[in-house]
Each structure stands twice: as structure tokens, then as C-alpha cells.
Amino acid sequence: MSLTRQLVVMAKAPRMGRVKTRLAKGIGAVEATRFYRRASLDLLRRVGADPRWQTVLALSPDRSVHENGVWPAHLPRIAQGEGDLGQRMGRLMRDLPPGPVVIVGCDIPDIAPRHIARAFEALGRADAVFGPADDGGYWLVGLRRRPRVVEIFEHVRWSSENALADTLDNVAQVGLRVAMLDRLSDIDTAEDFLRWRRRP
Image 1 (cartoon, rainbow, N blue to C red):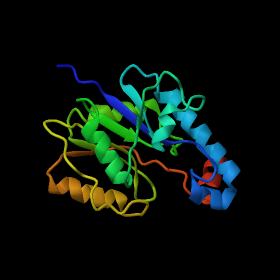
Image 2: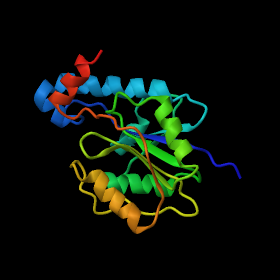
Image 3: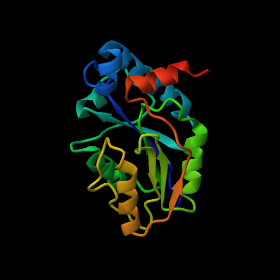
């Protein structure tokens, strides 16, 4: 049986005051919203049409799956549902059709198709794959989901320097083999944003 590789891009409707609120405190809500919209659409242009996987948009709030004019029309959309980040990612891992799943967010401008390809390649030999972020979290998580889907997102201190370590503790408890990808930076604060803007 052929199992489809599924890339899930978790995104929020780019509404001022609802996205990148920590970033907005440093650069203003207008600029933070503009960054989020641009970063999201740039990411989807880079990875959304790659034939090596099926890209799915997981949107928040749930009603935004029905809104047109923001997201590429050719990409399937599903609702993230309720709960914290771990509950929403866990639901995606459980509910998507069979096959390996990789999840990313929209605020990491350096994600390239090669990173996604490496993640799926890693799931050929590992049960879980992570892309560590500079702040102690992670910009990518993937699960092989065979022979079963395991819960790895419970009791994680989200939005903290402990998020990756907590998740890896969960992974170790269920005995999964882990692969790690390149370390990348997400853009959460004005300092992150200015450092990114200064890069050549």
C-alpha cells in the first residue's frame, strides 16, 4: 500500500492583533501582521506545489477554512480545532489519512523544500523527526505513524525554552527512534525580526 507523505502547514488567519502578538509589541501590529502574511505565503509558494508530498493547510480559527482570498486556492484546508498547540498537533497526527506526517508553522522564513525532503527521508529510518529552533522549541515535527500513532505532545511547556526537551522526554518514554534536522530561527520578537532583516 502506498502511503502519501503529508506536509501540514499550521497557520492563523493573518488578522491584526491575532498573529505575532509578541513581535507586534516590538515592531507594531501592522508590521507584524505584514511579516506573518508575507512569510506564510512565501512558505506556501516554496513548498506547497512540491510533488514529493501533499501539502495541507491547518487553519485557525476554524471558520477561516471557508474564507477565500488569503490562501492559495489549490491547497486543501482543514481546521486546527480547539486546545493548546499540543492538543491541536496531536489531533492532526491522529486524524489525517495513513502515511508519514510533517508539521511546520509559518514564522520560520528559512524553511526550504530541502528541509521538508530531509524530514520525510528521516522518517524512513526513524519514528519521529524534529527541527530544533534557537529558542528551545522546534520549527518542525514529524511522525512516521506506523505501526500506530503515539501521543507525544502532553505536558509540554509550550512557548518556552523547554518545549523541545519536554517533547523529547515524551518520545523517550514511548521508545521512538528520533532524527534531528538543522537548527533554524523563528521570528518571535523584535530582536529576531531585526536580525533577520539585517541578513544578506
